[in-house]
Image 1: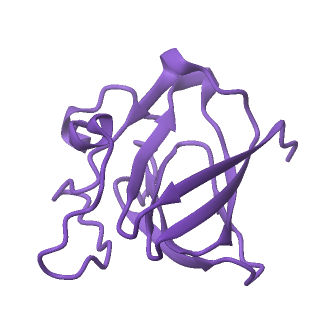
Image 2 (image 1 turned 135 degrees about the horizontal axis):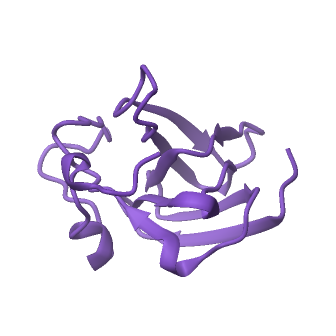
Length: 143
């Protein structure tokens, strides 16, 4: 795989949730992600209609300095939840970013049923676009 770009994301505040994001169509991206500082739960959701794992999710806990990486293939939505007050997150992508192709999926879609491991009574810190993301059943740009 040829990675075209390396990106860094910085999140401040425990329980910050980013995602679930993906790029549609020809702008789809595979990602290789790792945590450089702090700790996070990283999640990928299969959006490939013909896949036997369509709508299923996988997760891994990543900790700064542990050397672990998580590969997210094209056709998957991606997100993460910070488990520490500061997280520095690195991700390589195999395709360039295209803003008009950016899409998202609601992090708490009951059909997908992701266990984010949030303590009872804790709501994640979200950006408005993530808070208002569509459910899987309403997403048009699947793979």
